[in-house]
Length: 293
Length: 276
Image (cartoon, rainbow over all chains, first blue to last red):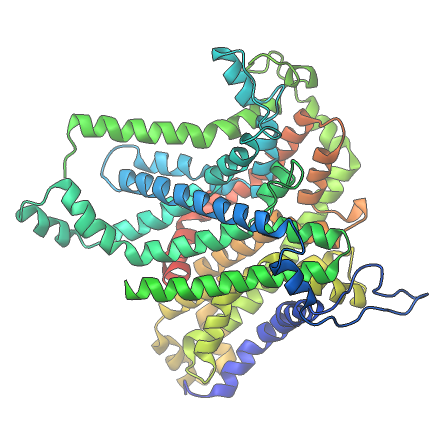
């Protein structure tokens, strides 16, 4: 009964159809565009026939050989952005999960309060923090004003325009890590700790020899998810700094979007493919690496 | 394990510190929404509104565009939820109950689909919706949002269906109920909590999405709340008090929803999403 494959495909059909139209066809089309010189000027209108053509790998060689001087700086910043964010997400999330994974009064209340950044829509968070960072009447400078005369131009002064969106994104991403790691901690069998205690293992020894190894499969999954999400997060950069000043805080996805809004469709497609290939190959390497470890 | 006093103090210090850090920005926005525009632009630190006012809310709700955006957002989110739940539950059922060639490949594709950066679909989708005449209509969003939400929903619902004993369906089949009847009359009613989480997730995805809405919608009366609200930020004089009121109104339903569903969301996340 379970092996009647056609019934399974009938159940799958609606989803596959929609996914084909909305995911696979546009994906293929994006890839195809990346080998052309399509822009909003040569795509053709009802008055003018399309005049774009295939250019082979030209867009990619342009990107990779530095024909676009902004690509490598953007890539480097995107990598720093991802590493710093995920580092803080994970360490803070782990500290909080460990702290919450004890028996004490009020832990549910704490957990619910700590989850608030996850509950608020991300774009609302981004817009609100832009307001908190405002140089003249934002909360941060107002608090700073209590202790010194100095004000910080958070969104236009080096290195603060790099720091500000990181603060926002760390605030945004910690709850997910905390909750996922807490779930992982709770599934570690208590007998392991009891046995270790009988053997006289200290708290630190128990942490390094039981907690961390037992948590490794959950950790490696959430870190991978965190890396993918942070690499791709659009709203935080777009709404907090707008990529500014002068495009310095653009990450690859906002950079791609800028190319798209300029009407440079083929370059946008090529950037997007580069992002996708980077992520796919990174996660393939990552999964092989974590599985062996 | 009983905690020592010093250890317990440390626990509470860490948690209070982080709880304040999580809550203060939100409280600040809520307080701002009750301030007058003049107070918001004061350069000294003023925590509580001197003269609490509902004017910002009143102005927001009397502006036609905010209500139009809210209506658009609700429309898009509801349709997305219905379509998304239908697609995800049928597909998850097939993956949970049948062993067939292509099953593990399909599961893998849904996993990888979560990795797509939205922008890679954007270029292709824009052309497709342009050709279909769907640009600047809610349908472009409904179609693209249901597929963003689907992979996660499928993985989560599959985990749910896996916990329902197959014997129940077999018994029904003996009584002459068909495969589709068994799905509809036995599995679906038993999975209401799982389906509720899926619905919640689809709704939130649609309610919060920014990039596609920003790209596919152009005329002001078609915008959804995220892009509509962001137009306030582009304005020369950023109306922060008004924006705070908008943030509060938009967030309240989502936050309530989130706290109602969080228990299921977390169990879904740990069984379906994280363990794959």
